[in-house]
Image (tube, rainbow, N blue to C red; front, side, top):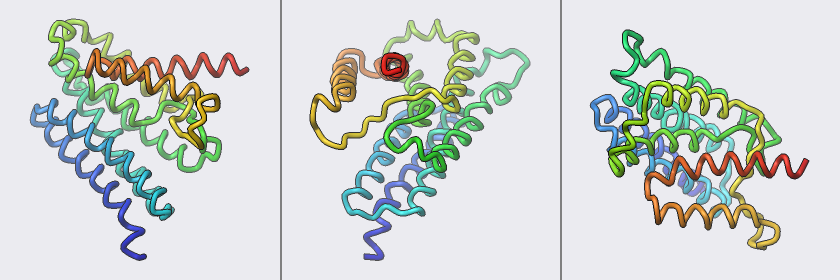
Length: 228
């Protein structure tokens, strides 16, 4: 039993290790490798919670470890990727001073989530993995569609940087992809979103990721307004 309760933590540590290696790769200019490692870390981040529920070994240690790993992979790493994208576009200003808002807001978002009892069935503010995947998908989309790189101007990248940072710490309610059961009527929004996202991934591949995340935010806001 003692070993069983630590199995989910191995997935969490895998997430952390992927994030650490991805930061190293980004510093060395291998941003595509870093983006793939971020995706791997995201899968491990999903599996740690899934395995914990499957084995019924949820723990406070696992919760805190998960946040620490997420801070590295989905807080610090996207900052480094954005710094790479901003390199050469900021003139005499070191891009480091522009992207520090990303890990700072990610830390606040993760800390709030750990103590906020209102976020058990939904989210308040954009989750850190969503922000990270949005930023991490940019170099992958550029490699897939090279002409898109021309739109990655300084204003566009700064809007992404500060917009996503604000959304992480905002009080905007967003639906969670959690299923208490598989009744379509009770989970209509989640099913439609997942099905639509899969279609976009098949058609647009990496370019679909930022579109899906923007859609997730917009659908959540529209749903919130409609329910009010």
